Amino acid sequence: MTIAIERIQTDNSLPLMTKQAMTWAEYEQWRDDRDAVGDKQLQWFFDRDCLWVRDMGWEGFVHAQVKDLFIMLLLTFWLSHDPQQKTYSMSGGLLEKTGLQAAAPDMILYLGDEHPVWKEGETRRIDLDRWPVPSLVGEIADTTLASDLHEMKQIYAAMGIPEYWVVDVQGRRVLMFCLESKQYVQVAVSAVMPGITVEALGGTIDRCLRDGHGAAVAWFLGTIV
Image (cartoon, rainbow, N blue to C red):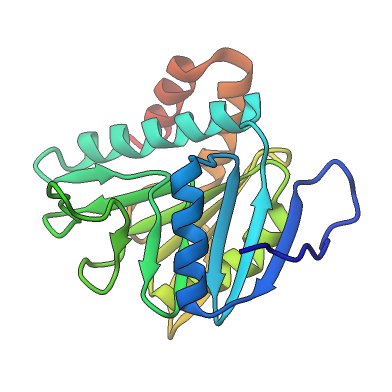
């Protein structure tokens, strides 16, 4: 299937955004074609009979650095906060609600016993008709801030994910949203991971880009003691 490209952004420094009206069956065919050729440079999401595709190219240096930082922060924080509680990071996995939505967040975190378990021969996608939604998802917005705050936020709210973070790399800040009455409300303190504030996360990004991951994590943990 060939996707007709409709340019959403006009700034050539931003990833090319494309969209195409598409049924769920057509989406599944398109998705499986991408799997077959191993096209890792595309990020896509599906919502209400429309496929959106971002041609990301190779992952940027700062994007990769900040994504790894946040996975480290979340796992380290939760282990220090509640070492008996199970934690599962499945970042980059494809979430699907059959016929409705699909997306692959930069960060996917499950807390507790209820989490997807893969078995030999099963699909590698996270089927939200079978498994619970993640406790938290996030997007690392280096060049994608506008769509992460609009289309992606709407999709994750429709999926019923309790908390959504947008990490604004260029702005050195985190925008945090909690789900209330099926809509996201911006907050300053995490409800899923009590004790984590947007202020501390913003400061940690600065330290990571200046001093590296180890110094940033140590500073962050010191702010929540």
